[in-house]
Image (tube, rainbow over all chains, first blue to last red; front, side):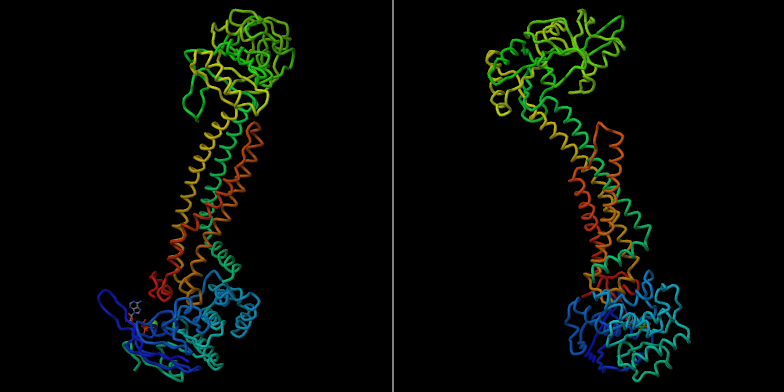
Length: 219
Length: 407
Ligand SMILES: Nc1ncnc2c1ncn2[C@@H]1O[C@H](COP(=O)(O)OP(=O)(O)OP(=O)(O)O)[C@@H](O)[C@H]1O
Ligand SMILES: [Mg+2]
């Protein structure tokens, strides 16, 4: 469960202050499917980054499964992030020199999980995402849809409780976009909390809950 | 992150950026090779020189005319003093109780001729004991006879090369050669080989010291070797010699007595300093490699900003990121320096096949030191880039922006 209380995030550009998040309070239950929408610059990515513990708010509280994340140090936030949160990015962010399999394995490797345990988890994920036959391909040998599937595999290999996807279909054609969305939704059906940022109203309408943002506020 | 994973992760990076890897490899290996080869050269030269100085044996004292006031540093190898060391002095020294034998030395260059052939040769005037102290032996004939030091006899022992040049295949024993303007009978030919103090013993003539004094028309001695009976008495005898000669020279201490050990240690000191200086110069090439590492690592960090952001988002802590970059430099340094060491051994082994007189071998401290230095430099110079990578903000880094994390 996620609880945000009066989050504020400001950016200073020169002597101008941008209010990227302005008094955002929010409660998200485990297993929800939420679409975050709003015009460009309204603060969607900023919200996702803070939820994903990649960034800190200037003020306000963030409770993640009862843990006050705003009070944690860098190393503890990193641990919490790798335990509970998976990311899917618009531009995939796969490591080009690693194979699909190694990319999926990366979070487990970084967390120091033993090789044997890793092999099983990675096999399961590749199997589930239908990527077994692409396991030893490098990212540039894969289509956009396949790349995003590898990225999703990487996001879920640590079995997080929350999946944050910032415009996951933004770089895809409609057919592979639909596939990726279906995949994410099926993961949500299994119990993961899914938050998708999207500019596509029909896609947003599929979510059970919509958050509309404007100038850093939820409206 | 597991160590095995760190190594395989780094290996993938290194093989992906092959050009950079090779440049760093070569730069570090050159530094290591430079240190090892130059010190090997220094050590080789040192053992060569020490061997040259080592011919006298530990029991020998060298007495030189003239007083050297400075302690340490090289003792005078040449030099005239106003009051010469005389044959009489030598006789007195030989009568001291701890002294087993003495060999007075007078040297100079003279023309030697036989049957119209003329050669310039180093002529040494000394005694029978000279052969024993210097461990010289003859290939043919005999060494100088036992004579009173002040009694001459017109006989000589000649070097191997000189015998060939003057006599060719003919036997020289019993023949008379002219040295300066006196005739000497050849009674022996030295065994081939051996130089000492830079004298090529293949090319010398050895005559009784009294004859040499009249040939050169001098009273003084170039120097005097004295062999003590037992090594433990070296210092006592040395003192006794100084006292005796001071007394004989009207109370003026105007001789220098040195032991081979003392001479060797000062020579060794100088050569050690030389070797270390050379190693230091070679180490500068390591510094250059270090700066190269820093630049290359800086470039890598900026090229891989997005990857760093991703690693952080995927659960790498700042210290994991720092470790990855430090280990990357460290691994290159270890592999490159070990291959540099191997190359040094290959080069010195080949050199040793060709130069049998001189043995090159990098000293252990240079081998260990060059590797330690390479790794320390690599870590030191990649610290800054690694630190920069570790403090990147993941959000900014994922967008390819190099901005520090605000905490
Ligand atoms: N690192 C930053 N430095 C300065 N300003 C920033 C930074 N990140 C975001 N902002 C500003 O904060 C506001 C919210 O940005 P954010 O990226 O959250 O918008 P968004 O809703 O994701 O927009 P888009 O739909 O274009 O992705 C914008 O005005 C943006 O310019
Ligand atoms: Mg955005």
